[in-house]
Amino acid sequence: MEQDAKKHDGGKIRVTAVFARPDSQIVKSLSLPEGTTLGEAVEKSDLMSFVPAEDKDSVKFGIWGRVKGESEILHDGDRVEIYRPITCDPRAVRKSR
Image (cartoon, rainbow, N blue to C red; front, side):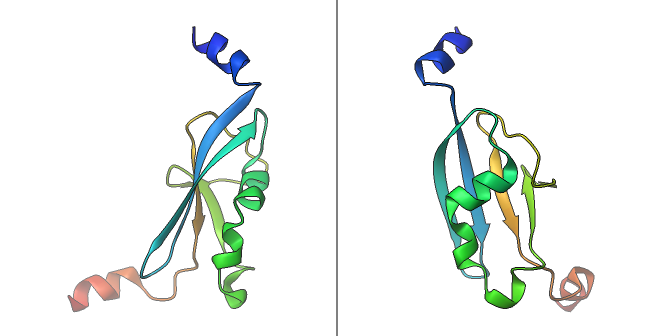
């Protein structure tokens, strides 16, 4: 039955794209063709427009909390994530709490 649903959906997959800023989170739902890559989904989401210019060269991308390459093929239900560069040592921050 699941395959029948995909046929009726025109070979589309649904993914969620997320970019978390220190003060908020931006979430977009996307309907994309089967075979879409992680890089293509990031481009279609337009979430890179929220990344500060100085960070654009150092961001990484992932799926469900795991860093992946831009050529990774997405699957229905995936969560595409854009990771900001780490600007401080997380261990030092934890110790200071």
